[in-house]
Length: 318
Ligand SMILES: Nc1nc2c(ncn2[C@@H]2O[C@H](COP(=O)(O)OP(=O)(O)OP(=O)(O)O)[C@@H](O)[C@H]2O)c(=O)[nH]1
Ligand SMILES: [Mg+2]
Image (cartoon, rainbow, N blue to C red):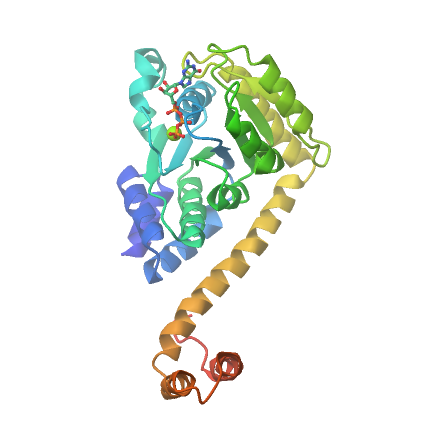
C-alpha cells in the first residue's frame, strides 16, 4: 500500500503526491514507512523558504516566481503554511505561459497546510512534505510562511535559502524585522515598490543584514503584482544556489538541519511513547497517589520517574 504510493510519488503522479502529503501531515507509522521508501531519492531539489510579515505580497511573489522558474524549464513544488490568501497557481500563469508549456499541470504542484498549536509537529510535517515534493522530481520547492514566530524560524532552518519579503514603510513590522528576520534572511525583497518609494526601507534593511560565510544578503525590490523585478529575483536565487554548491555550504547546511531534525524527532517520539507507556505502569499511579496525599513531593517524584522511565523497555515499534 505505502510501497505503491511511494512509487506513484517517485513518478510525480499528483494524486499520489496529495495522498502522501496527507500521510506525512497526519504522522504515525505510515509516515515512517513512506519516508523510508522515498528518502534515498531526495536531495536534488533546491528548497526556498519565503517568509515575512502578513500581507507583504508573499503569495503573489510565489505565483510570479513559479512562472519565472517554469520559463527556465524547472519544475516547482509549493507548500503554503496557513495561507490567508490563496495561490492562483495555474490560473494566474495565464494563456501566454500555457501556450509555452503544455505540461504545466504536471510540472507545478501547490499544496496548503494549516498551522496548528504544535510547532514541532508542523515543522516535521513541513520537512517531510519538502521531501515528498523533492522525491517527486521537483527542481525547486518553495515554502511560504507568515510572521516571525517559531514556525518561521523552524521552517527557515529546513530549507536551503530563506527569503524575507517586506514592503515599504512597514512601521511596527520594521521592529519585527529587527527582532529576528535579519538573522534568517539570505535574500531580502522589498515588494509593493509601486505604492511607496522603497529606497528608505531598502536602505534600512541593507544596513541591518549580516554577512554570512562570504554571502552578503542582497536587498531587492519588486512589484510582484506586475512581475516587475521577478526575473532578477530568480537570478539572485540561482546565484545563491550556485554559491552554496560551490562552497560546500549546501551540504554543510543540510547536515546541520539533519542534526536538529533527528534530535527533535527522536525526542518527540520518545516523549509521546514514554507518556503512553508510563500511564500504563502501576508505579506511575502509585507515585501520583503519593504526591497528591503529600507523602512525596513533586521534585522527588520527578527523580523517581526518571528511574522508572529509563527502566522501561525500548519501544517495540521502533
Ligand atoms: N500594489 C501592490 N499590491 C500588491 C503587490 N503584491 C501583492 N499585492 C497585493 O497585496 C495583497 C496581499 O498580497 P498576498 O500575496 O496575498 O500577500 P501575502 O504576503 O501572501 O499575505 P499573507 O499570506 O496573508 O501574509 C493582495 O491584495 C495583493 O494583490 C505589489 O507589488 N503591489
Ligand atoms: Mg500568502
